[in-house]
Image 1 (cartoon, one colour):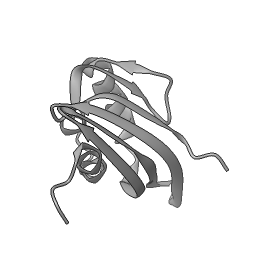
Image 2 (image 1 turned 90 degrees about the vertical axis):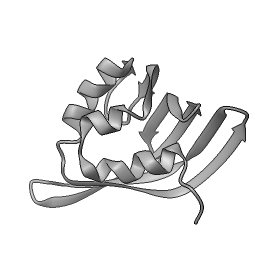
Image 3 (image 1 turned 180 degrees about the horizontal axis):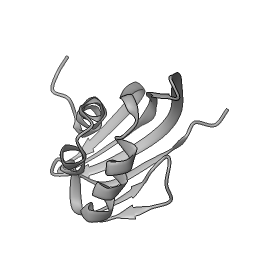
Length: 117
């Protein structure tokens, strides 16, 4: 396997549950449309989102499908991932779709929403 792109690194680091580390993937003025919230704009807002989101027990993120396109400094990855975590000692698996747009290795736009049934 070659070098991981931003989306793969982001997904892998979810298990570390470190909001500063997770926020470091984003550009200062990034836009996040998260799976479990309305909208976060800028790294300060994104940081506070991750404080809450990463608090889930045994949280993991697995990419199940991804397509990546690159052009110059820009990269766009779209696909599907599964968040798994325990809530009241019951394993929860949330399937979602994503789009990461990054420039120079920093996420400038990230959209995530529940996978339609």
